[in-house]
Image (cartoon, rainbow, N blue to C red; front, side, top):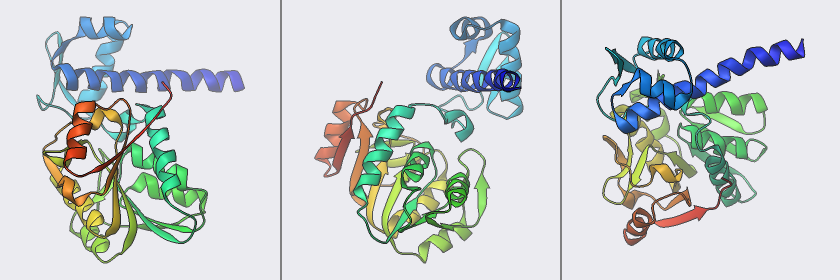
Length: 270
């Protein structure tokens, strides 16, 4: 029975990784042919076509004759379920560094949604002296199951791409709170554009959390440093510190430091 269960799980895991790889290829390089994607991923053309059909049914891409085309002809927002597993070692290193920032004692900590902030939540989960405020459904669920930290969940509409609760109700709830720390996940961080993400309403909701914190720390793996997305969460002046990894471009890190931001670079296993 154990052998059969393991065999059943493996294809699902492999397909999830393949779907994420397809979305990354489209995001980074634009339109791709079925033949080239199949060669790159080491699968048959018929397997790849089934993958493309699934992603199209989820409105994540549009297929064209002979290939696949990004639905928005620009950098797409990869759903959280396909981002899990990317740069795991970097996110774990960031989470350990961030958890060490919070000294023993009672603290109220804000966590926005995202895979890096989810790693931070897991690093803090054993603490029974913290209250976590979040607008991320998956973070609230995971922390509640562990039954150590107290959890406050902001209410509102849930974005399926990020599992974040956003909108006026969430903003109003967050605006009434006082936080010691806010750990903010982003899709991009740069000296010129500040903290950015894909969705304007999500940006406004995360800003509401940021504004209520005594100390604001951005958590982002090195790939996100220097990126600029459509919706600004906040300018760099509103942030106290960035915790990232050594894969970040040194030039972008230098510009962030020149803008007055404290930058902490943590090592990670490759």
